[in-house]
Length: 126
Image 1 (cartoon, one colour):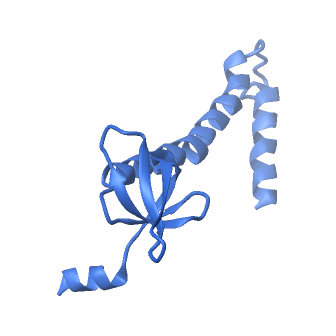
Image 2 (cartoon, one colour):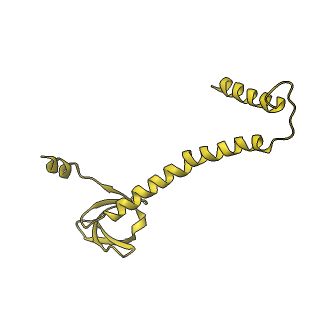
Image 3 (cartoon, helix red, strand yellow):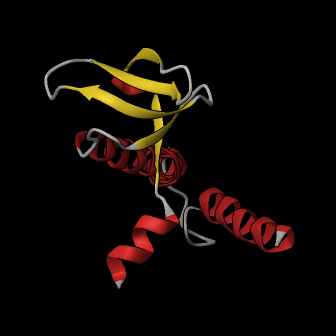
């Protein structure tokens, strides 16, 4: 793979030095020098920015569908069950212990994922 990359860049540098033809000498071409930077910009967008936007959109959608009695995991690793949630409020109350009825108020953005119960999903399919 590296030899193929070296060949491609080697041909590009030869092409840039010769001006495209052996006998045709041209002046400095700023567009030809900007092409690699533009290509790197497109790669950066498609490999870094676009997947992050998609992940953020899915997370916002998951938070919008959150309802009472959903089992969740926070980004800090705390497991709990949603007890109180309002659409406009930024905080959510979760119950972390069934025996002592311990509750915690957390921000909506700190919810990492909603846990799907296998028992619920199989009973809905039947």
